[in-house]
Figure 1 (cartoon, rainbow, N blue to C red):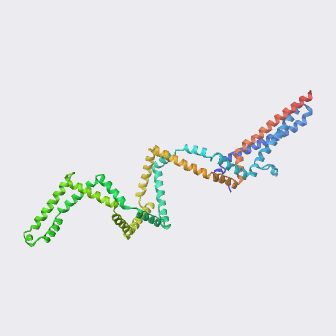
Figure 2: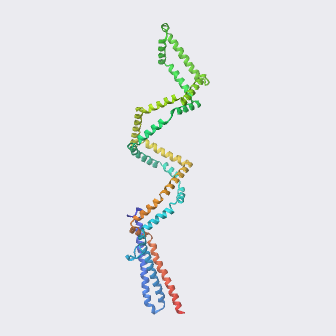
Figure 3: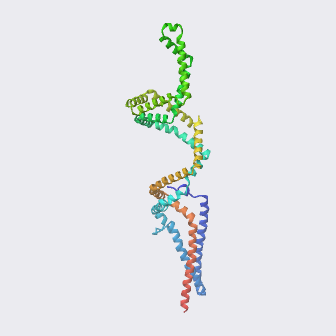
Length: 427
């Protein structure tokens, strides 16, 4: 497997490779120079004792340079291509290095303490708020959500999820005992005094209905049909109807204008009596339950549900295709407003930070061994010759200076030892 893009050689690495070659030639030149000086000084040693010191320095410098050359080369490859044990260290230990690197990262970077401390430094809430407040990003997010909706709807239909949801909703509705809920709602309605306005509305509607010409004509026909013929001849029906309507409308006005009217008390008692029966009378409960089941069994309700779903689906598909921009604009506005609200709510941002920290900490704790194995497996699959070349390009220059240091330190050590030997011979 080749190296990942982040590790492939760059133009900068090419410059470093050229510099590495220059330093290598320089270090090799120094090694060759010390060897030549050693040979020359040995040859000139009979002419003057000073050449002994030069020869000692050059000899030790040559040995030190050769030793460090061997050490540097053995780190990356086999010196002179010879199968010498314990050479090409990086290449020979690829799997072990990969395993140790994975373990090192797992034990030192993915431990719960350091991970949690680092996560707590991140203000996730502010990042989300700033991200959503950017209208361009919110538009992109809205567009992405809309593109995903048709596929989600298709998957929902093909998977039978809609049927399952419909059955679950129907089951839950059937399990609801509506009688106590209705009784509680009506009792609260009465206790809050809202029924007074309802009574006023009923009286107003009755007054308007009774005073309409059509209503009066119907009542007059009914009264005329019940009256004796003699009274009909004298058109007593009109008088009776007018008196009935006048009395009724006057009564309605009195009740509407008098908050303490006795009829209001009777209306309260009637409602409360109905509420009590609704909450305790099994006949009422059975009747409501039957109405509920009949309503849910109506084919019109199923057709209505399918029609609503088809319309919603069509609207979402048109929004996803860009034919309609209404939903996208609404989603964008919603996301931007959510970002503004989050930016102004420090407590909510703190809760988001704590929640994400807990989630990510748990994820890292559960997956850190997998991360370690992934890193190790990736390194094991890399082309080590390519990786070694890249490592050598980036750190090889510094390693070449070890050869210079080896020659210098070795030469000085050889000179010191030769000086000590020369001094002992003079004693």
